[in-house]
Length: 141
View (spheres, rainbow, N blue to C red):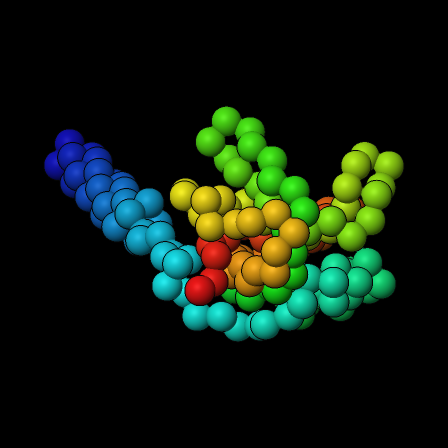
């Protein structure tokens, strides 16, 4: 009976340690502050879009997972609930305008003027086959 009790207590201790480790190292992990992140790449929006269109795999290796500064003119702003998306349009595709799409952080859309040159900083997540996607985007001043 004593061996059974020791085994149960050992298993409980292991599960408790694993649960606490998961909480402190995975669940409670601090989030990246994209407003203060360092820029890894600076590029014109037309160049970024054409690189993804011509060779998506090479462009993905070069830009995906990096904070990049993209310069160009925003042609369109879309809003869906609380999500605001700015688009630099370069082509008309089968499903609508194609180009570089930016998911903006809160209160950033107020700083954007349609068809005026601007620089936007964000985290590049890839290419959908029609758009280059950047998330957590802020206006770079």
